[in-house]
Amino acid sequence: MGGAVSAQPLAVQTEPSGQVVTTDAGSLMAVISRAAADPNTDVDKLERLMALYERLTAGHAKAAFTAALAAMQPLLPAIDEKGGIKNNSGVVQSTYAKWEDINDVIKPILADHGFALSFRTGLAGDGKITVTGVLSHRDGHQEETTMTLPHDSSGNKNAVQAVGSSTSYGKRYTTIALLNITSRAAADRDDDGRAGGLGGAAQHAITEINTCETPDELRAWRAKTYDGLAKVLPSNELREVVELYNRRLKATKSGGQSHG
Image 1 (cartoon, one colour):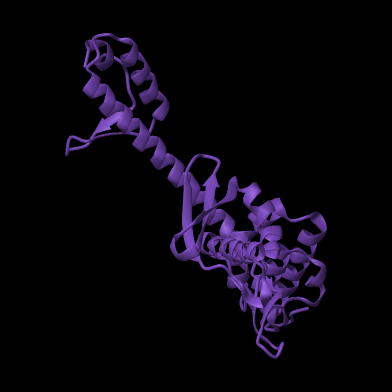
Image 2 (tube, rainbow, N blue to C red):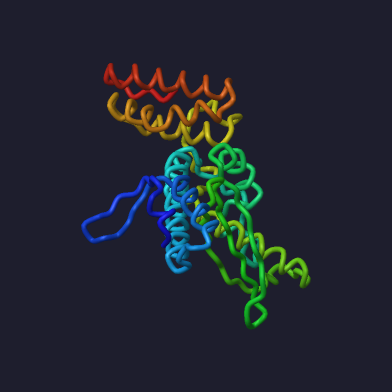
């Protein structure tokens, strides 16, 4: 490469292996810009610099994605399973969390942590459809997962309804896979008696607090989760969570196990 490039200060280090590493993408891009404007620049070296820049920015974006996901996941509550699958006699054999219930709960939490969730649909062989869930972060990194599904023609659905049902199913389960969401039958939820009118994140926090059996467990929960909750919960819901936390802390210190 021309001398104009080698003379520029750059926040890079050379490891013993000879590999060049840097943590300053802005400085590297400035060097690349100057090199591109120099007619004496070696094109091959310029391309290697561009490849280095792309790896660097991609690495930073992935690290930001991972950090944001780790901060967000404790705030994603278990979703009540309000949907039911019936047998031929009309008896509910199993339950599931509906897509609209999942979406309503996760949308504000995703937005607060810089995530967007989108989907692509397509056709596979044998009349099947594909649903791809894409979880994107504001810093540029994204992860995706794909399901291939038959048309759901159960319950005398017409062709359009069958496609819609399969698409909803795909959205539901690709989202669950991307975010590691759990669901449970509504009747199995065991939280504070006043939690019925609270949002999903507050209900999840109340459930977690009630499972803490010692002051140390409660303090660990607070250190891990409280700051994130305080950013997303309405003041009345946060107050309910704090009041329960304080009651549980007092009860565990005195040896009691009060949940109310």
